[in-house]
Length: 183
Image 1 (cartoon, one colour):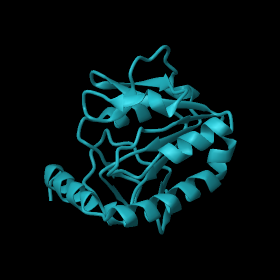
Image 2 (image 1 turned 45 degrees about the vertical axis):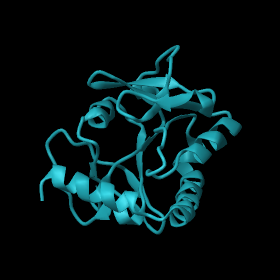
Image 3 (image 1 turned 180 degrees about the vertical axis):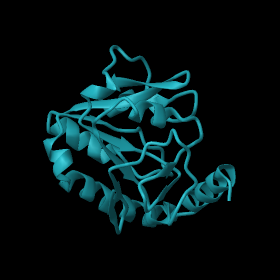
């Protein structure tokens, strides 16, 4: 199956999760993320601003604020992602691609300065690969970082193997509501 067909299939799987079931899954995923030693040790964390269909990041972002971690979120800038500081969840608004991002970034961090990167995706495989929206934004960003790369997903978003390309950057860990895949 080609990437476009897979994107459609996994968008539909994610979309059809019942809201109550999704919330239960989000609680489990967030708990796993917060218990990670890499999260506990991280001074700086790059999160994606989750939309309702995605594995939630908002509770983990708030916990990071409470722990005085430096919190960042990406902002789409052409073909690249700017890494912008986030001081309050209220700063997140839908950007050009519909993802939540800061409205007006006041400064920018370098990817090499981020300890932990929390990554979204439509689908993930059991080998550390992800299928994103198709823009390649995260792959370009991940090539510039040495931070620990964690994907968050619902079990329904995991498949045995995804098609990959040379530029794809694998994850270090994938957390789902019932599994943790280490790569």
